[in-house]
Length: 373
Ligand code: CMP
Image (cartoon, rainbow, N blue to C red; front, top):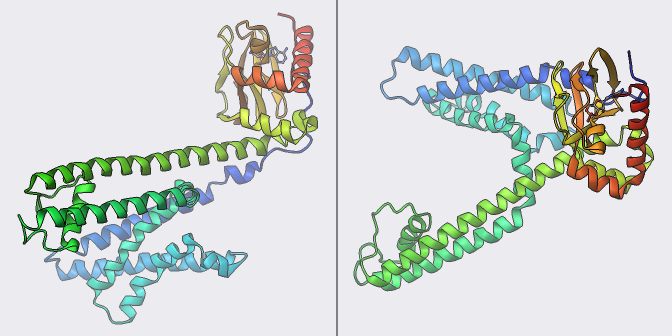
């Protein structure tokens, strides 16, 4: 039996074919493996007393890795809609650094050992292929001003510390603190609390100064960490919002609610994926969230009854409205993308969006009549 619940969407939600495509994943795995093989060859090539046979083998391997990356660069360049702007982008520059230097160095007559050293750029490929790279780059871009301010304070503190150390220590240790530039090394190792011990303050004033520099260093690092952490959390929230907004605006259920309401709804919903046959809610358990189906299909199971709900429909609303345990088990009938609305957000949203509450309550009442508990 298929439940005739709220109407399904008129157009398909999401490009499933693109999402399921395995080719890009295979390609990035291949690129990663290639970079790792190249890096291993470059590292092995720096070992002393390497037999000549391995030496030329490693050079051929490094050259092969670089040539494959070069071919990949050419293909990407040809496929880019705006070639110049692609070529100037950070990922493209990394691709170029992975492809060009080794063969170029060999062509210009560098020794194989020296040419292989350019293989260190393959490490950048690993960063470029990391899905979190764009997130990290964006956080750095967003937070560049506060990060720059803290860096400036850092430099100023180092400069003052070095000058103060020069003033209080130069008489006691003229060879270690004979100039401010020489004291700068001490200031850097002290503020980072590295303390190599090659330059140690001998006077009481110098030790008090060292303590103050160490404490201020910890404070400045904490500031950096705090800026980055809040930048990451803001960016993740923004991405989450965009992802759920993208799905929310395409659901007919929300279509007539208007942009401000949609924006509030998108902020409250969390995207959740369910694999086929995964149990999403279990009969008899307390309910703390309801779900909107963005893509895929679920099956509602209650005793011998079976109801199918498709994209555009929702479930899990009964427990939120009545406060009773879940009256059915809901299972993903296919890989399904859900938008989850937690009970606290449901209450706030219901209070501010009476139209949405009305739609949910009407459907809930219809379900109760069509399949009474
Ligand atoms: P809830 O009781 O919170 O959890 C199980 C969910 O299954 C329930 O909310 C409804 O959303 C859904 N459900 C129960 N009965 C029906 C029905 N007759 N038609 C469609 N969905 C139902």
